[in-house]
Length: 572
Image 1: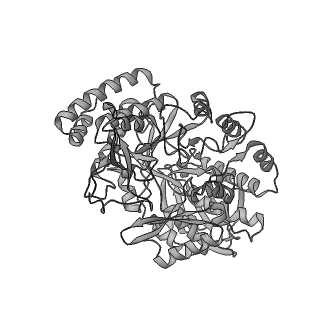
Image 2: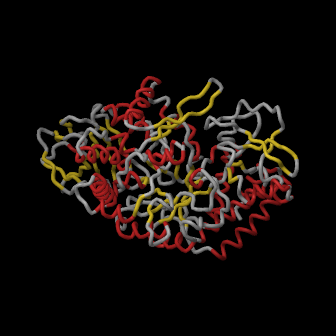
Image 3: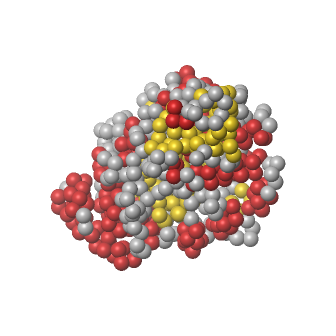
């Protein structure tokens, strides 16, 4: 076992407990080495991903059919429509749960029986690169672990965090406008238990090495069942120390490093992704030194700035931010996304959009049928999240369907063109709108973007070329195929962000062998002429990868129609 593992465990738990924990972990690693298939790292030792990788994010029950369990419906849809379009599928928490659409896990080692079983999960993993969540900050208050804790069973008495009444917790960062503590009766005694997100989501105590070792075993069990990308959910909250914000604690970073080291020992080809919906500087801290923490971090600033660009018709703020991004690196990269099962975070936009611009964005979201979620701060509640379908946020209903599709696809092309691996929410890929009926059913704002779809109806809509859903899906598929066709879109390929004016977001991607692609995404409802950068000057015609057509060049300019996407390569 790598000596760095023992050193980190001794730092976290103290010398004696850390040494004992490292011995127990070594036994677990040796056990799993004998069980797991060989999952080699990439040939160059960097992130095991290339230009052909794109992940669809979905719930296990997003697609339903009366003839089969939801996971089988999902596979049927994927087999029919996604081969050659996406390479991976992220199934959001698929274990039995009690709330929060899966993120209140009752039993980590089982699959929700209403959705299917491990056979269904593994079947999807046999065709697509499977991504899964490790929900390790908290678990369900109705799960076995917490029930045993409430009974006072010795094994579980330190699995959760209790706090004495009157303890000053004002420094703790709060993600939601809900109490930090909830009272439970523990072995006949009332106690205050730490609950960062809700009274049904009780925080786990990673100061207890038994909790850490349990999750290592769960992690390796997932890999044994076919998972190849691991998402560490809400990782920033993991380590609690009273008197601090309990966000991004040094020991949280050490935990991420431990997970990375264990993967290097057992399954080096598995990708580790951290999910931290926080300002950009804090988010990218989970790259560590570039080789010792996450392979990828979610690009949380991209969704609100892209949304703002297309609502305002001005890409200036998006361009300015993108110019500050680190150079692409083979050892780490971004997990780029625009929409997810959650809403669009407001916090990552602060510092890039002014308060007035954020208020304008919030107002536009409300006008387009969206909702706003709030978080508690010492000075009161502030907007935390924009809850809206990304399609409806970008492409207003007053436009005809062809222009709605064009505008929405242009926003998606921004994400697909940038360095990193794309994560595409199923309702973006399928062009779904606001699901207000869902919000009425649950009373939860986030449900607006979590619609359940009929497999039969979905197939019928996709077969109808005049439907908005079909226009978006087919256009998205063409974008993804164009992306996978060119090595300039490799996650580590060079990226140069251009300033071509407010009406277009532009960049140049360059493959390792020097082939360049100029990516232009119009954010404007007007026609425009774009002067080609020096790298592309002198061309008489130029090839658009998106649509596989030749674009004429006049006086070193190309013309763009509203919300057009041009991914241009010089014809050889």
